[in-house]
Length: 193
Image: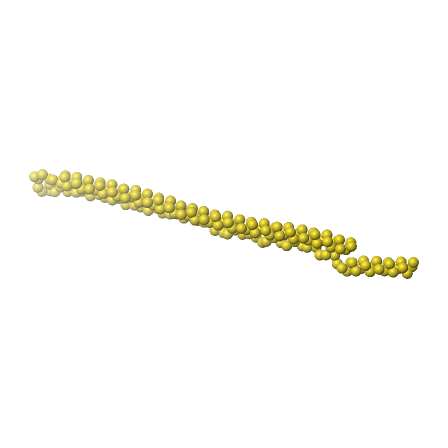
Protein backbone atom coordinates (compact mmCIF):
# COMPACT_ATOMS: atom_id res chain seq x y z
CA UNK A 1 0.00 0.00 0.00
CA UNK A 2 2.89 2.30 0.86
CA UNK A 3 4.46 1.59 -2.52
CA UNK A 4 1.16 2.24 -4.31
CA UNK A 5 0.55 5.48 -2.36
CA UNK A 6 4.06 6.70 -3.26
CA UNK A 7 3.45 5.99 -6.95
CA UNK A 8 0.09 7.82 -6.81
CA UNK A 9 1.78 10.88 -5.26
CA UNK A 10 4.45 10.79 -7.97
CA UNK A 11 1.75 10.47 -10.68
CA UNK A 12 -0.16 13.48 -9.21
CA UNK A 13 3.05 15.55 -9.19
CA UNK A 14 3.82 14.53 -12.78
CA UNK A 15 0.27 15.43 -13.92
CA UNK A 16 0.64 18.87 -12.29
CA UNK A 17 3.95 19.39 -14.08
CA UNK A 18 2.38 18.35 -17.40
CA UNK A 19 -0.61 20.71 -16.89
CA UNK A 20 1.82 23.56 -16.16
CA UNK A 21 3.85 22.63 -19.25
CA UNK A 22 0.66 22.57 -21.36
CA UNK A 23 -0.32 26.05 -20.03
CA UNK A 24 3.16 27.38 -20.82
CA UNK A 25 2.83 26.05 -24.38
CA UNK A 26 -0.60 27.69 -24.76
CA UNK A 27 0.80 30.98 -23.43
CA UNK A 28 3.77 30.68 -25.80
CA UNK A 29 1.42 30.20 -28.78
CA UNK A 30 -0.68 33.21 -27.70
CA UNK A 31 2.48 35.34 -27.35
CA UNK A 32 3.64 34.24 -30.82
CA UNK A 33 0.24 35.08 -32.30
CA UNK A 34 0.13 38.54 -30.66
CA UNK A 35 3.75 39.34 -31.57
CA UNK A 36 3.13 38.37 -35.19
CA UNK A 37 -0.09 40.41 -35.28
CA UNK A 38 1.72 43.43 -33.82
CA UNK A 39 4.58 43.08 -36.34
CA UNK A 40 2.12 42.81 -39.25
CA UNK A 41 0.33 45.91 -37.97
CA UNK A 42 3.64 47.79 -37.72
CA UNK A 43 4.48 46.71 -41.29
CA UNK A 44 1.21 48.15 -42.56
CA UNK A 45 1.79 51.39 -40.66
CA UNK A 46 5.32 51.53 -42.12
CA UNK A 47 3.91 51.19 -45.64
CA UNK A 48 1.61 54.16 -44.98
CA UNK A 49 4.56 56.15 -43.57
CA UNK A 50 6.60 55.28 -46.67
CA UNK A 51 3.80 56.67 -48.85
CA UNK A 52 3.66 59.83 -46.73
CA UNK A 53 7.43 60.31 -47.00
CA UNK A 54 7.28 59.91 -50.77
CA UNK A 55 4.31 62.29 -51.07
CA UNK A 56 6.07 64.92 -48.93
CA UNK A 57 9.12 64.69 -51.20
CA UNK A 58 6.97 65.06 -54.34
CA UNK A 59 5.18 68.03 -52.78
CA UNK A 60 8.49 69.75 -52.05
CA UNK A 61 9.68 69.08 -55.60
CA UNK A 62 6.43 70.51 -56.97
CA UNK A 63 6.91 73.66 -54.87
CA UNK A 64 10.47 74.00 -56.19
CA UNK A 65 9.21 73.61 -59.75
CA UNK A 66 6.52 76.23 -59.20
CA UNK A 67 9.07 78.69 -57.78
CA UNK A 68 11.33 78.02 -60.76
CA UNK A 69 8.45 78.48 -63.22
CA UNK A 70 7.57 81.76 -61.51
CA UNK A 71 11.18 82.98 -61.74
CA UNK A 72 11.39 82.05 -65.43
CA UNK A 73 8.10 83.85 -66.14
CA UNK A 74 9.37 86.97 -64.33
CA UNK A 75 12.64 86.72 -66.27
CA UNK A 76 10.75 86.49 -69.56
CA UNK A 77 8.74 89.60 -68.62
CA UNK A 78 11.92 91.49 -67.70
CA UNK A 79 13.57 90.57 -71.02
CA UNK A 80 10.46 91.59 -72.93
CA UNK A 81 10.41 94.92 -71.09
CA UNK A 82 14.12 95.48 -71.82
CA UNK A 83 13.58 94.59 -75.49
CA UNK A 84 10.70 97.06 -75.79
CA UNK A 85 12.79 99.75 -74.12
CA UNK A 86 15.69 99.00 -76.48
CA UNK A 87 13.50 99.48 -79.55
CA UNK A 88 11.97 102.63 -78.11
CA UNK A 89 15.43 104.14 -77.50
CA UNK A 90 17.15 103.02 -80.71
CA UNK A 91 16.14 106.09 -82.71
CA UNK A 92 19.30 108.07 -83.40
CA UNK A 93 17.49 111.03 -84.74
CA UNK A 94 18.69 112.70 -87.88
CA UNK A 95 22.29 111.99 -87.08
CA UNK A 96 24.39 109.74 -89.23
CA UNK A 97 27.80 108.30 -88.81
CA UNK A 98 29.68 106.92 -85.85
CA UNK A 99 27.81 108.88 -83.19
CA UNK A 100 24.46 107.77 -84.56
CA UNK A 101 25.68 104.15 -84.63
CA UNK A 102 27.01 104.45 -81.09
CA UNK A 103 23.71 105.89 -79.86
CA UNK A 104 21.71 103.18 -81.67
CA UNK A 105 23.97 100.41 -80.32
CA UNK A 106 23.83 101.78 -76.79
CA UNK A 107 20.31 100.48 -76.22
CA UNK A 108 21.18 97.08 -77.76
CA UNK A 109 24.23 96.84 -75.50
CA UNK A 110 22.09 97.72 -72.48
CA UNK A 111 19.56 95.05 -73.50
CA UNK A 112 22.34 92.46 -73.86
CA UNK A 113 23.64 93.25 -70.38
CA UNK A 114 20.16 93.04 -68.84
CA UNK A 115 19.47 89.78 -70.71
CA UNK A 116 22.76 88.32 -69.48
CA UNK A 117 21.93 89.26 -65.88
CA UNK A 118 18.42 87.77 -66.13
CA UNK A 119 19.70 84.52 -67.69
CA UNK A 120 22.41 84.25 -65.04
CA UNK A 121 19.82 84.62 -62.28
CA UNK A 122 17.62 81.98 -63.93
CA UNK A 123 20.50 79.51 -64.28
CA UNK A 124 21.43 80.06 -60.63
CA UNK A 125 17.80 79.53 -59.59
CA UNK A 126 17.70 76.32 -61.64
CA UNK A 127 20.89 75.06 -59.95
CA UNK A 128 19.53 75.97 -56.51
CA UNK A 129 16.30 74.10 -57.28
CA UNK A 130 18.28 71.01 -58.33
CA UNK A 131 20.36 71.12 -55.14
CA UNK A 132 17.20 71.58 -53.08
CA UNK A 133 15.58 68.58 -54.80
CA UNK A 134 18.69 66.47 -54.18
CA UNK A 135 18.65 67.40 -50.49
CA UNK A 136 14.93 66.59 -50.29
CA UNK A 137 15.55 63.23 -51.98
CA UNK A 138 18.39 62.39 -49.57
CA UNK A 139 16.23 63.31 -46.58
CA UNK A 140 13.33 61.21 -47.90
CA UNK A 141 15.63 58.21 -48.45
CA UNK A 142 17.00 58.57 -44.92
CA UNK A 143 13.52 58.76 -43.38
CA UNK A 144 12.39 55.86 -45.54
CA UNK A 145 15.31 53.68 -44.42
CA UNK A 146 14.75 54.52 -40.73
CA UNK A 147 11.07 53.67 -41.08
CA UNK A 148 11.87 50.37 -42.79
CA UNK A 149 14.64 49.59 -40.30
CA UNK A 150 12.11 49.63 -37.46
CA UNK A 151 10.14 46.71 -38.91
CA UNK A 152 12.51 44.87 -41.22
CA UNK A 153 13.00 41.92 -38.88
CA UNK A 154 10.13 39.63 -38.01
CA UNK A 155 9.75 38.85 -34.32
CA UNK A 156 11.98 36.11 -32.98
CA UNK A 157 9.95 33.96 -30.64
CA UNK A 158 12.63 31.78 -29.19
CA UNK A 159 12.28 28.14 -28.29
CA UNK A 160 9.07 26.63 -27.01
CA UNK A 161 8.89 25.84 -23.30
CA UNK A 162 11.00 22.88 -22.25
CA UNK A 163 9.14 19.79 -21.18
CA UNK A 164 9.39 19.17 -17.43
CA UNK A 165 11.42 16.39 -15.95
CA UNK A 166 8.95 13.79 -14.71
CA UNK A 167 9.69 11.76 -11.65
CA UNK A 168 9.71 8.04 -12.41
CA UNK A 169 7.46 5.77 -10.37
CA UNK A 170 9.00 3.83 -7.56
CA UNK A 171 10.75 0.70 -8.72
CA UNK A 172 9.00 -2.63 -8.36
CA UNK A 173 12.34 -4.00 -7.25
CA UNK A 174 11.99 -2.11 -3.95
CA UNK A 175 8.48 -3.53 -3.56
CA UNK A 176 9.70 -7.07 -4.29
CA UNK A 177 12.61 -6.68 -1.86
CA UNK A 178 10.25 -5.31 0.77
CA UNK A 179 7.83 -8.18 0.21
CA UNK A 180 10.68 -10.69 0.24
CA UNK A 181 11.97 -9.18 3.49
CA UNK A 182 8.51 -9.36 5.02
CA UNK A 183 8.15 -12.95 3.80
CA UNK A 184 11.51 -13.91 5.33
CA UNK A 185 10.59 -12.22 8.60
CA UNK A 186 7.26 -14.06 8.60
CA UNK A 187 8.96 -17.38 7.85
CA UNK A 188 11.53 -16.77 10.63
CA UNK A 189 8.81 -15.91 13.06
CA UNK A 190 6.84 -18.98 12.03
CA UNK A 191 9.88 -21.22 12.27
CA UNK A 192 10.91 -19.79 15.66
CA UNK A 193 7.56 -19.66 16.98
